[in-house]
Image (cartoon, rainbow, N blue to C red; front, side, top):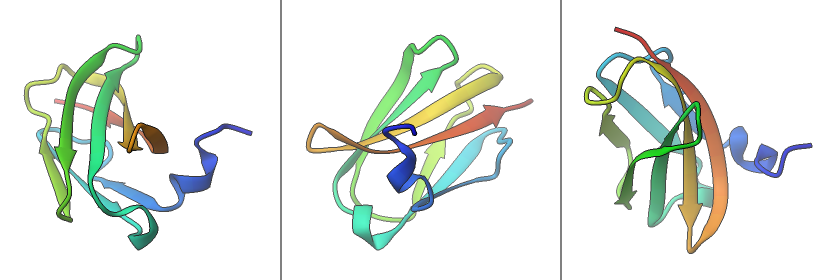
Length: 88
C-alpha cells in the first residue's frame, strides 16, 4: 500500500469540503512539533506552517477552490497525509 497509510487513521480533518477554515486533530502518537504542507493537485506547495499546539486551525481562504493534499512532517519524516476539497 501507500507509504502514508499507517497514520491516515490518526488524522481528522474537517470540514471536508472546506471553504475558509479547516481544523486538524492529530492522534497523541503524532502530536508535537509538526510541519503542515498544503499541496495543490499538481503537487505545488501552496503554504506550509509549523505548529505544535492542538487543535490546529488553518485559514485556507487565500487558496483557490480545488483539491488539496495536506502532508504532515515531523523531523523531516512524513507522518501523515490527508486529502480535502476547497469549495466556495
